[in-house]
Image (tube, rainbow, N blue to C red; front, side, top):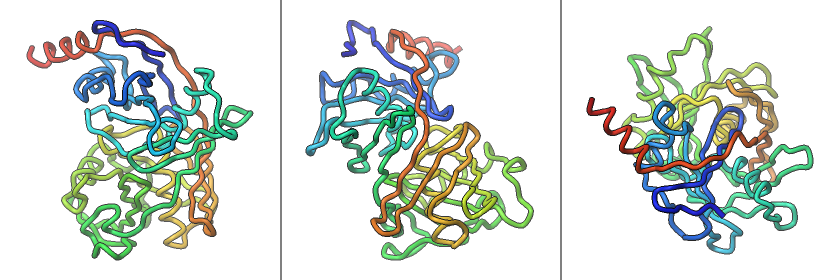
Length: 302
């Protein structure tokens, strides 16, 4: 078990398609052992360890085996993360913790998520049922009881057609049409404008999608609280759900992200979304969060 001694922390770095996380074995107490500010400092790629977020493995709640909390690289907290939950499942396996009937029951702020580490090392996750009503996402683009499909949204001086989906966290899905390409997209410019748009009171993740065939999607992601990342598991799931709703794709497809591929399936009978992809350890180490935070603060003042 990772134990934080006076200002020392044992951590483990994992990545899923290049979406990387600092994992902390936090089973000794019910609350994260780092503050949001310390987590953000550790995520800094020049003054800290470097990551898209910090994931804490906590004692279980509400009948689940374990709980998961995630602080993004800006210190905000995410309800859930698809790549992160795969990394957490692999971390549990690497710790030698047996699963229940082949799967781990994980309590998250988005509800219970069930990942299963397969014999080939890939992780399949039952991501639950997508939430499609405006009030569930949440967004003001439609009435609370209505779906948000192909709604106009003014961003960066132009009108975009968007579909909104919640996978326990909010997503705004944009299908690029009319000759637009992912390569030409100025993600660093438009991403923050979508994330902080007043139509999304809790901010939003944004997926820009090209449908190459009914069973193959390409996308780039601007993640709420983390910016441009190489992959987003909940984003891949939201993109497929939106594509099915708009009759652009079949309910099972390969989703290509900058960091690699995920297989996503929306079971229309049960409404559950299933995601399969890799999760790999990178390295382990010890660090002093207070020193990292102090070093970063000193640099910002200079």
